[in-house]
Length: 210
Ligand code: SAH
Image (cartoon, rainbow, N blue to C red; front, top):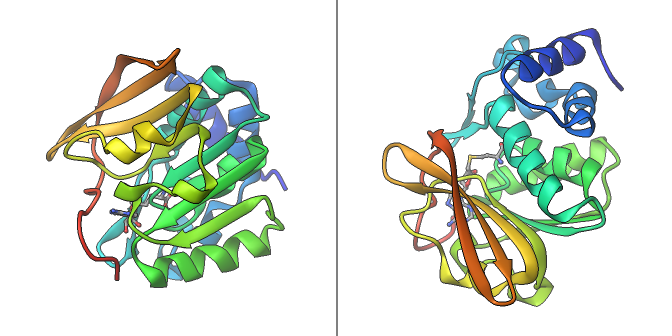
């Protein structure tokens, strides 16, 4: 249900350079407050990242919109998409409203559990969630037309390249404290790499899931 505050946020994103109308309409229609701790709900429609507990953050709406429009322009809405880093489930909900099928992997069980409840609350049933290590992707559901990584990787995870369909697109922040957002296209087995902009994500953690 689109709200006045949602429309205002979409307007801010347009000023920031987002151009895809479907993406802006989707951002306007998702109640971001349900993805936040109650004490931060009053900040839900500000264009900022916010803490969601466990040392993690819900992404800034601008970056959610930017990554989603990059994916959509590359692969279209009929696509099957993998998200790495479910977190609050906010980006997942935007993807679920735009793409045919969404799979999302999260390493922190407590976050995955909350995200699942929120996605059900929004009646988004084209999403499959997994508690696992995103460095490994989700092999049994691959190949994916699109992959979006919402945490910063030290390097490009090999499994994600393997699980990307031919003609597919991977959007991933790569680097240390500050990262470059990369858009990687696979065409006839070849990869082409475009740098989009400098971004600030929490790290894509390697090792045990919790
Ligand atoms: N898309 C989320 C962003 C959450 S922040 C949102 O809109 O809220 C990034 C998330 O990536 C965190 O929840 C973190 O726990 C998760 N993450 C970090 N390393 C991971 C890994 N190796 N595998 C899966 N998830 C990981």
